[in-house]
Length: 362
Image 1 (cartoon, rainbow, N blue to C red):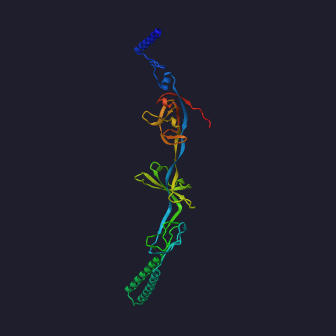
Image 2: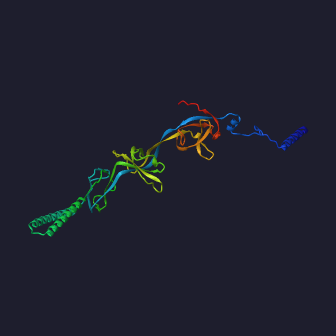
Image 3: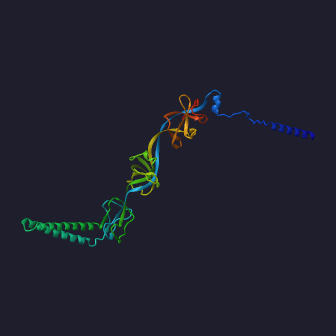
């Protein structure tokens, strides 16, 4: 028992003496150990730091813009009555296809036919009076004033006939364009006033897809470019850009773009949500892996390259787009020697030993 107590006291005394010296050694490290970057350690050894590199050459990268919008028929015309009257007949119904000049509505003529007959009779009488005055004037039995008065009466009678004929013609409402009849439609027996809609015609032989494009993308294409259109209802078509506004919306800073799509078979509808894929001008860019991008001391995104003297050069880049193949950047020369491994351990101007990446057979 005494031996154990003595041993414990000796151990405790030894530990206390060691702690009193203030000397501590951490396992795996020396008191004077200094951790330095691999590049500094390599340079200290007298050999350049080795980095893996590959040649990168700029490529033409096609781009496209996805514009969202809605379809719009070429024309939607609400055909209105041009005179008052009771609707006597309506030869068309919803969904009917009509041609320009087809009858849409017939109004009760009322006394319009009698008014036309009266105007024609007045015209005939005025014509006779004018003829007689002209003959008498030729024989010297009539004054020039009388001839002028009969001529004015004849002109007024002719104008009366034209007005009566036009009023009678207005009782038949004709289609001003070809298309498909839809609501609103006037009901037979109702009384129509001037401006009351008789029928509505939709001309959908041409459909326009209208959308908005940002000011950043508007310069990437022009009128005449073709676009692929997809409707929410499932239809697909190809159209031509026929209009681009010259001024931006003051609130959204976007420009209106219209795409004309042929719709001869009538399968595309008016007012449907649509997407248009508009090809943009291709860009010359480098395709890189996101892993090779790095930051400069001032926070700029770029890559590190090796020049002809095997010295490191930082080059800032602008990311144009990103897809499944990587990132596409511009701002670089046509061809560069890109550091793909070790770029985070070297600095500008440092001498390195580039090692080419092994070729990968496809």
